[in-house]
Length: 225
Image 1: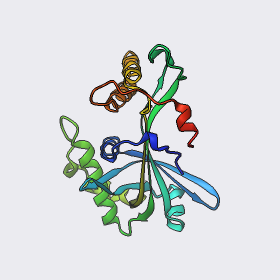
Image 2: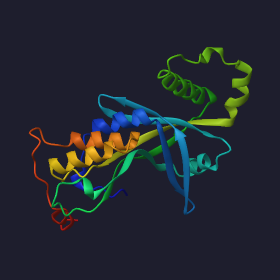
Image 3: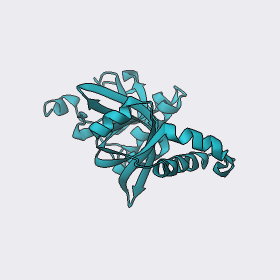
C-alpha cells in the first residue's frame, strides 16, 4: 500500500501523461513469500482519459514471468522527477524544515502473459514504433532481418497488465503558501537539473490563481494522520 495523504492530490490526467512519457516501470509481485522485481519498458494504453492497460515483455529466462503465471497480482511503479527542497528558499519566518518532493505512480492489477508468439510480436512492434516516433529519424522495423527476429522471439514473452487501481502521488508541498512555493521553485531552478526544473514547474502549478494563498501548518495535517 502506498502512503498517500489527501493533501498531495493532483489531477489524474497529469499522472497518465507522465506515465506515457516515462514508458519505463518496475513490476513488483510476491511469490512463495519472496518479492520479485523487474524493470521494464512499457506501453501505457489510455482511452477517454482512463488508463486501460500496460503492455510489455519479459525475457523468458527471467523467473519473474513464471512467478506471475502462478500468482498474477502485481504492482507497477513509475518513478517520476524528484528533488531536494532547501528550507532557505521559503519566506522569512516560515518554520518548515527541508523536504524532498517527488512524483511516483503505482498501478495495481493482474498480469496476463501472452499465449502465442504472435501476441508477443505485436507488443514488441508497438514498443518500437512508439519509442522510435520521438526520434528525428526512425529505424525501420520492416528492415530488420526476419531470420534474426525469428531466432530472438522465442526468448521473450509479452504481457498485458490489467489495471485494477491507479494511485498517483504528487508530493509537491501543496499545503504551503504560494509565496513559499514560488521561493522553492526559484531555488530549484538554480540547480540546473531536469528533475529540479520539473519539480519546480509542478510546484508552481499548485499555486492559486491570484498567487497569494497562505499556507497551512503541517502540524494540522499531521494531527489528522
